[in-house]
Image (tube, rainbow, N blue to C red):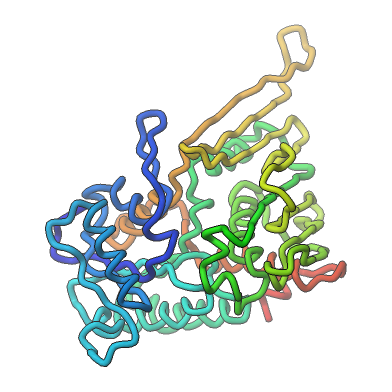
Amino acid sequence: MSTGSTGIALLGAGIFVKEGLLHTLFGVVQPLTHLPALVSLGDAAPPLKAVYSRSETSAKALAVAASEVLKLTQPPSIYYDGDNDSSVNLDALFARDDITAVVVALPITTQPGIIIRALEAGKHVLSEKPVAPDVKQGLDLIRQYNEKYKHKGLVWRVAENFEAEPGFLAAAKAIRDGKIGDINFFKAAAVNYVNKDSKWYKTPWRTVPDYQGGFLLDGGVHTIAVLRTILPNPLTHLSAFASLNKEYLKPHDTIHALVKSDERFHGTVELTWGFPTSTKPQTDGFVVTGSKGWMTINYSWGPPPVVKVVINSITEAEDGKEEVVEEVIEEPGCGVAFELRSFFDVIAGRDDGLGLGDPSAALVDVAVIQAALNSHGNLVALEQLLAA
């Protein structure tokens, strides 16, 4: 981590900020969450100057964890709510001129207000997905950013690590390069088992969600982001059904959707956090079928995490007959570090041109989930929802 005079702050002390081990694959260190990602970036990351959480206890725990894993000679300052001392609240953090950017990983319904406060204070912002709890709030956030802050040179990006995964980017390039021809149809499936002992379920704001879809919004946007990343054209319409199969996962835990991209291609999306057992039938996460072959994509959490892409392409042999050639691509799962590096580069004036973290693109992911939750089998035009 750099020792420069200006630095960053982490807002939020939850699982996705401080947990996640470092694993090694192909000689590459793979971080799973924010603190390990900062470790892996080394001097490419600005120094961590401060941390914030809603409680003093969790803020202190994050500061201790950060000091240990980042090997800081000076621990980050702690800020938190619920104290009459104004020198330790979030406004005090925002007032510091040695903090130029914040990484926001707070509950879904809390983030929009914090994003605006950070921008108003002149900070660059990287906020965790989803971009907002629903399309309406997302549109309002994007409007405020474009009208009030973007022209000031402030950067706001949404941290959607799946769109930054090298494996998914490799799959997208293979499709663009025509390795499976024109896309005909696809399938996406995310099958998850969550019990009441799960650390994810025990997070208070997930146990009693005050936002649509529960885990379907929080986790389902990842699957939609992959489709947005790999497919050559955007999704335009869907028809879906949503259900609740486990009462403690209210309001919904499962979606089955038929989706299409105008008249180009169509596919299915299956998302569930309500699977009955931790053992699950073997299925591919993504299957994309084209006119000249097919592709499967699977994310293995490991350890170590790996994105595996298998491509079967039809080629013409020397004797004029068709033959199928298989290509396997394996990339380490390191999307969090990738998105952080890209964010740090762009606020330093070095844009990698990948277009990561675009809030409008992230809003499409929310729109697909929202449309699926409310479709009830009716056809929904995503463009109309996003124009609301």
